[in-house]
Length: 396
Length: 92
Ligand SMILES: [Zn+2]
Figure 1 (cartoon, rainbow over the protein chains, first blue to last red):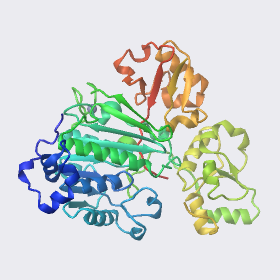
Figure 2: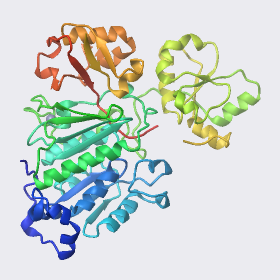
Figure 3: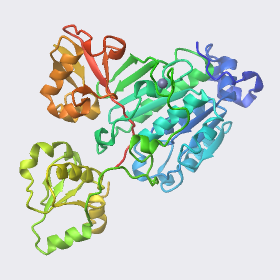
Figure 4: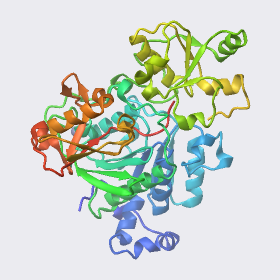
């Protein structure tokens, strides 16, 4: 049994008759009981992100009676979030995610106190924010924030309930450096940006973060109540297509840069520079990638209308072509471009586009290394084309 | 034949196969056989001749670093897997 947050003191709280009725299905479980329910009420959990993972986390932790829940998010609810971010509703589109989530939680369980942090988590504020909570739950979606959360948890001695998702696959663990390995013991440094699978690619089965976030909520509740075997020193691998759950063993790495024998990281660092990617879309960080020449959708349209013999290369995936496409383009998914160079003339202007312009810029950098010089990145991708040139196409 | 499980982010380089049969008496030989079969995978696993530091290879449920690393011998039906660093989320 690992009762992690020693400072949780069940003697400091009482359960009202209303609370006893509400939590009766916990109270009659011998493993939880009045003692466990009081521990939940005395506990505080910080949720970083109120998106796909944060939605089920916030709902179940609130329903379970965690006394104080902190929410960190600066984003607003977008229609494309609703496929998986079930704490928000259609009427919340355009509202702050914090307000929307806080309102849902207040309705679900008015006994929960909610702290709102309407900011991106950063090296400047992380230690202050995290230090006020017993358990930290990482529901973020990018490498810089994951390393930031890990390092802050190690420095503060807090358990980090980790979960991440990709398409149909998920991972869950509890990184708690006092008792076992941390995230950096497994991944000392992130993959270089060029090798991070670009996310068009960013698709995710909507129910997947529901599964993984619910598992994280389970681990958080186990840590607080001290029941069962937490995922410390184990990484759970979930594959929704195979419907398989497997666990692998993680060990503390003596050479870990932050929790090892001779740590080289002793304070929070610049995680965007460390990972080479921005942490969020309001970041001013720009990666080291060589700049590529841009062309606007209006210029492309004007050149086509003028009869210009322009080659337009669409580097999205086939499933995206079914959503929207510009007629007459050459379509080669990003991953196949190098194998199909014979289809790309070097003596011809080529406009490369993807959904929003990130993947196409990557393709242009790779082609430039192969001697191509007449390349243009269509700014804003096909979504810009749909907004400005052809409104019959959907934006996705 | 040993088998290696390919994580979703790398399946685009293995013709979308989730598991690939490979030959080798050791982890090192098996991984080199893997990239010989799927050359597009090579830059994701190797930097020059060395396995990239962020690539985690497990045999069963054990990290090969805590076995005999790349020299770990493989049985005929060994199950290897690559553990990817996934950040999650949706971008771009
Ligand atoms: Zn560590």
